[in-house]
Length: 412
Image 1 (tube, helix red, strand yellow):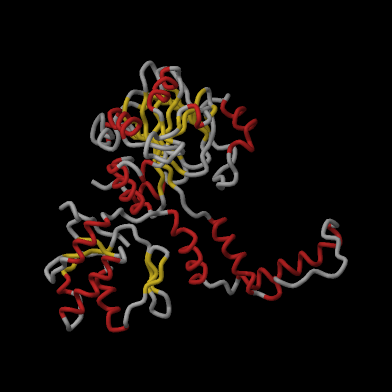
Image 2 (image 1 turned 90 degrees about the vertical axis):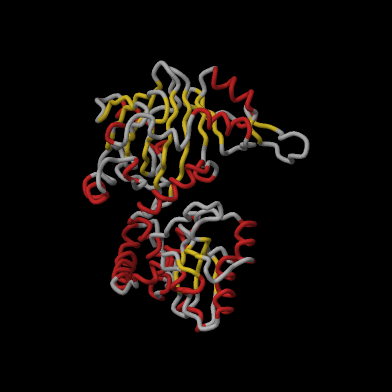
């Protein structure tokens, strides 16, 4: 079962062609494998563990009451002797606020909770998008946030309890990140008074997909509700426009100084210069190099996605005891590419190898597990040296995983 098939009962081609970015899609638990299908990712008991025993700190927890986010000092403070922090969650304060009707929002769980780290990595690889995972714990008969929209797509996974969702069409289709709903609060409120496009109760194991911009609000029924929200972020056409404009600075016509004394606030005076600028920009755009745009986007999007976690000490021990029969594989989720001059870019670092090693590095990074002895180098010691370097640079990992589980295969 793929990660995508756990949240939507459509094959990837049908989802991409008819649903993605176009319309909401409700999928019932029965079509996803049955009720309670998401408790393996996060359960109420896991919430207790995170809030009380894991040293959770802000901003990994937000608390909302009557649609307003409470200041962190209401539920966080010093970590006690030996913990030089001032923002550790106080479980007794969180319990009190929740009992009084506040909603708890655990943020960034794709960085904190092992089952969600793995699931987010798999789903992100399938969608080729960076993900964020938050959990919302809402008291019985409560609503954490008023009607709003997100500037990224979301999958809502109902874990425990039930929650009623009202979904309305966008007031601004496909909003950019800087076009948050607060700037259109009146339109959002007015639209929320109309007939919803979707009014459904999510039960355990149900999933709901919402494209960015679709208005939504949710209220727990007579029992507490726990759901996961997976936010899917990614570049838009506007992202391409931004990078094109940056690259356009290479054209001297588009760097030219405007005429002396020009009043840029006067439309009549500005018109000829604007026309000349548009013409120059049009000429430059016809020569835009996709490779140059892609190179900028690689650097821009790289920080949004973290590669699969490694176990630093165990990985170093594995490298130190490396044998020719040991298997390695490219680190899942690590963004990497070769530059025109033969340099490997991986995780924001530039790594250069001797020319005779490059074929061996390319084989090690092809997404399949390989033994060290398979690397195409004549000297067995050279194979070990190269494999150790790839391990210590965190570019590859043990194929079976440090803990004996599969390390996974990088689809890239």
